[in-house]
Length: 401
Ligand code: ASP
Ligand code: MG
View 1 (cartoon, rainbow, N blue to C red):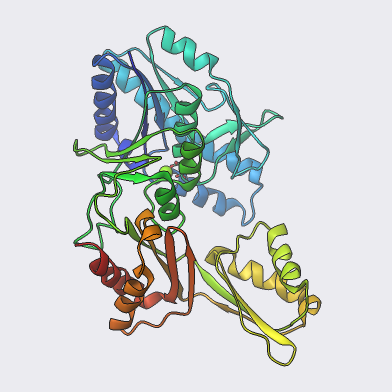
View 2 (view 1 turned 90 degrees about the vertical axis):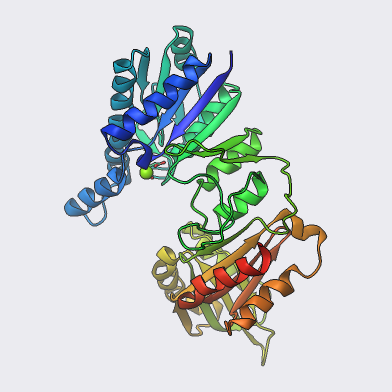
């Protein structure tokens, strides 16, 4: 008998029909002779609606109270799904994140899982029940409710699969798997049979929104093979694992990220320690810097240009302005109307000319590149936001036939 963890996202449980659809998938899995642990997200737009409700009360609500509020969304789904399973004659019990043993650190709204005590889940499985667990939530050491950050239910599912040594971890969603580009926008986008953890991680951090990136990190760390499949359309999905078949593809995907802003600090003194002063200020505020460029110095000064998440742009600039005397007092410029377009694929490690093909596709569209960054399996460019969709299409055409 195998143990299978099945995770269902918000759209998959958005209403009565979808909940019964999920209950039937779970029932079929159980009837095939498996133990099943189910992880669910909040129904439809519930989490967004709860955030909006908080906004009606306070523009800067306490993070602790936010988590208390947001965790309610998942509790609705688990109880309704357990009821639906019981209606179908399947013994089932719902558990909150804390009942299922999720212990997190203190970081409200973006907590990390510290420990997972699986005794309760295991004893319910031993009683022959399907266990329905609330994703996205846990309890910190002071026994306060925490949440794992947006999209955190994927992480809950992977953590459970790892801790329970599950035989499979299936992530059910409203798309049929991982595609070479957003299939709603790129007509020729292809579904991948397999992708590696590293490729998936690069795609997830480059704007592809299939899996939450922390969940992929965790899956890689504990080597939990993931299967991304549709809850609506029963066709084979995409398997995410350590080593994947290349399917003869140089690149596995093209992604667009518009949550990017460029900050330029002009006239930074060309002496040791300046980058440290700038980036430690941002690091202390938890602002992630992605691509960094530095101009070659002139007259003892240089320019420092880098990207941050667009949501953090104003915050970053105000921190930098307040402290600008420490790094030359030069002008600080924020640009938000830009986008990052990336290609990802382990195949580029052993092939020359991948970057040239990407840049040629952009040149043919007359698209100007502002910044470039590369890793072993990824190349990203910063371009104007209004050209980004055209860029994705042109690059996709150049690589994927
Ligand atoms: N309900 C939470 C969110 O919308 C967690 C999740 O969906 O995974 O972010
Ligand atoms: Mg959700």
